[in-house]
Amino acid sequence: MKTVTLEACKQLLTRYESKGNDFPYSIFTADEIWVYHYDLELRSQSLGYHHSTSPRKKKFRTQPSAGSCMLTVFWDYRCLTWQEYMIKGKKINSMNYVKTLKWL
Image (cartoon, rainbow, N blue to C red; front, side):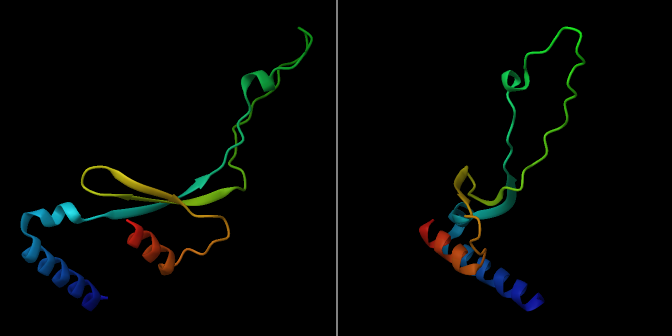
C-alpha cells in the first residue's frame, strides 16, 4: 500500500511540475452514496371520510422502500460536474469508472 501511495504522490508532483499553478484546477474527485426511493403519501391521500367521533388515524414514519441505487457524483474546484446513477443489477467495477472518466 505504501508503494502505491508513494507512486501516486510522485505522479502528482510530476504533473504539478509540468503544468505549474494550473495543475490543481485539473483535478476531479468523486464520491458515492446509496439513494433510496420513497413512496410518500400525500395529505389528501391520507384523508378519508370519517365520522367526527371516530378516532384519528395514527401516522407512522415513512420507511425507505426496497428500491435503491448508487449515485456517483464528480466535481472539480468550481462545481458539480457530473452525476451518474448506477442501473440496478449493474456491477460497480473499474470498467464502469474508466468509461465514465474517459467521458469526463
